[in-house]
Image (cartoon, rainbow, N blue to C red; front, side, top):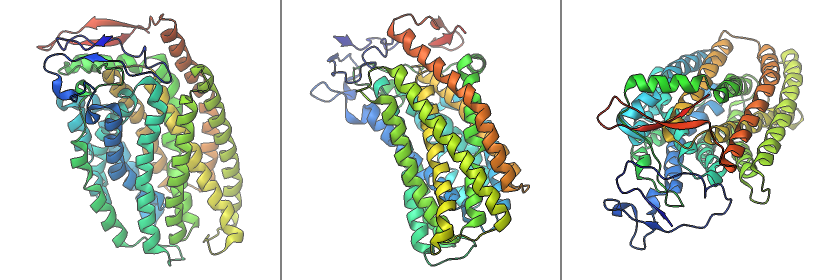
Length: 479
C-alpha cells in the first residue's frame, strides 16, 4: 500500500504504477493535515485530481489563446491588411519570448495558480488593439500552461490530457469562428471583419482570470495512485538560472529546438494565405473548420501515443512520428505547388465558386492538421523528459520561448511584406531540415522509456539546494 509523506518534505517515487496503461487505484493513508484533499470515502476530491487541473487549464486556454487563435484564424486577426497585423503580431511574440523565458521565476515566486490567472489578463487587451500588453502577460501564460499540461498528469494519460488541453483551445477557435461566420456570412468579398466580432471576443476573454484561480498548485494535487507532485518553491534566483542553463544545454532540448522553431516559424503563413486569397466569410469558415480538424488531429496523436492495445510505448512513439513526418512533408509539397499557381493568377476565393475554392481551402486545412499533430507530439515528448513540475516549467518556458521567437521572426518577415511563394518555400525547406533532429529527439524520449522500464535511469540524481529558508530538492540531469 502506498502512503503519502507525513512531513511534507519527502516525495513518493513517481511513475511506477503510471507506466501501466490501466492501473487500478491504490488505497492511500491520509496523513494529518491533508484531510481536506480527500472525501469521506478516502478518495481524492475531484477538484484536486489531475483531470480537474487539465480542465481548468483547458478552460483558460479556451478563453485566452483559444479566442486569440480564432481572431488569427480569420486571417491575421480579421484585418483587411495583412502587413500591419503581421507587424503587430511580430512585436507581441517578441515580448512573449522574453516573458516565456522569465516564466519559471514568476511561478517560483507566486505559484502555478496565480501565474496562470495573471497570464490571461493581456488577451482582452489584444482584442482591443494593445498587442504589447498581451505579449507581456501571454508569455507567462504560455510557460505555465505547458508545464501544467505536461507535468501534472499520470504517465499513461499524458497524450490524451495534452489533447484535452488543445481541444479546449481549439474549442475557443470553434466558438469564435462560429460567431464570426454568423456575423459575416453574407460578406462575399475581401475586407475587414466587423467590430461586433471583436466585442464578442473581448467578453469571452475576460473570463480567463477567474477561471485561472480555480487551479490547484502542484503540492495540493493527488494523482490516481495517491502520489503527490513535488514542486519546490522559494528557490534562489541564481539557482533557478543555473537550472535553466542546465536544461538549455541538455541533449533533449537541443534536439527539440528545430521542431519548436519550425512550429513557431510557420504559423504566420496559413493566416496570411487565408487573408490574401479568401473573402471575409470564407476566412470565417476557415477559422471554424481549422479548429474542428485541428481538434480531431490532436486527439488522433494523443490516442496513438497512449493506446493500450499497442503495448510498446517505444513503438507508439516511432509510429506516431512517422505519420506526422509523412503528413507534414506531403502538406508542404502541396502548399508550394498551390502557392506557385496563385502567385500568377491572384484569385479571390469564395465558397460560392466551388471550382476554384476547394483546392486552396483544402491545403489551408491540411496545414492546420499537420501543425496540430506536430504540436501535440512535441508536448508529449516534453512530458516524458521529467516528472518534476519544476523541470517541466523550465522545459516549457525554454521551448515555448524558442517557439515564440520563431513566431516573432515569421510574422516579422511576413510583414515586410514577403512574397508568399518565398515563405512557402522556406517553410518547405525548413521542415526537411528539422526532420532529422525530430527523429533523434524521438529516440531520446524512447531511451527515457527504457531507462524507466529497467530501473536504470541514471540520468538524474537528487541534490540538496541551499539558499532559502526551506531547502528543496530538484532533479539535476547529469548530462
